[in-house]
Image (spheres, protein in one colour):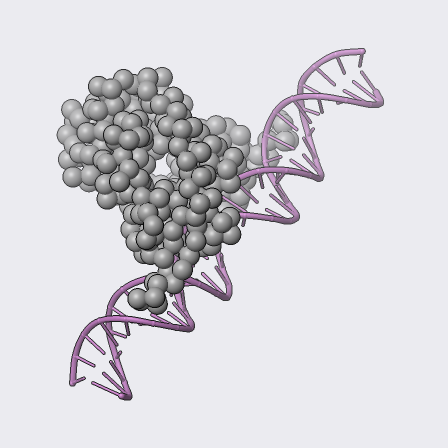
Length: 153
Length: 153
DNA sequence: TGACAATACTTGTTTAAACGATTAAAGTTT
DNA sequence: AAACTTTAATCGTTTAAACAAGTATTGTCA
């Protein structure tokens, strides 16, 4: 029994190495955490990609951001920002305008409706993250945070 | 600057809490690791969902497994196992047969071609995982593994 | 300046994911 | 045993992801 199986991820260790074991656990954890978040977002008609774009735009403020800049900032890359923005525009959560300086560029910024939606989601999202991870305790969370940093160096 | 941004995930900490910071880092890490794995699998015409099913079937051996059993064992759940299996069958990587005992059940098992494909992927996959995580060192990997276990309790 | 290349975004098309409804078989109840 | 419920898998349709090709604008340079 050295195969992939959600019921006994641990069994993979000996045959496939610690690295593989850790990878499987990472995937499992992220999927479980993400699932609950997507449920919360879906209630508001958002996917996590859409939500993340809205948050990036909130961070950008009045001036807004170009498609390419949004793409660069996205944690989970998407090859098709345009259509994600299309949908957000249809929902009136963002406003798009072609730049006067460089007419190739289309700048998107958060609408008032978008700001309100994000604001309404802030607290529930915070609470959900707490519910999901608070039980670890601050020490372990700090440890985990550092280990995740280490992976990317 | 308290918003989601791949360039400065750390800045989220103060305003959104350590829990949120850790979640973002988990998502980022898993996406980066998964990306390379998907590239490797795509060379063989497989998505990670397909690959994981093949591995589950290898673990099941001769008798094979029912759709529902495959679904339960999948780390990343899918609502439509049937069509994933359809594709694997078309690629001749699995064989399906309706159970004689209970004719509702369709049992899938790995074909010879499927076994060979998996075998050919074993070493590259192992090496990739090593490349991605070996630099952490055994101690930190063990730590990380335990912390991930803790999240799910 | 006119041709060529690079950048920024959009569109078209193919492919796969999501969700609900449907069929078929087996188990349960009266 | 007939009616009902549950379980197992499949199918139909809608929706979104992926990838490649295309359009428009700007920048470069001979």
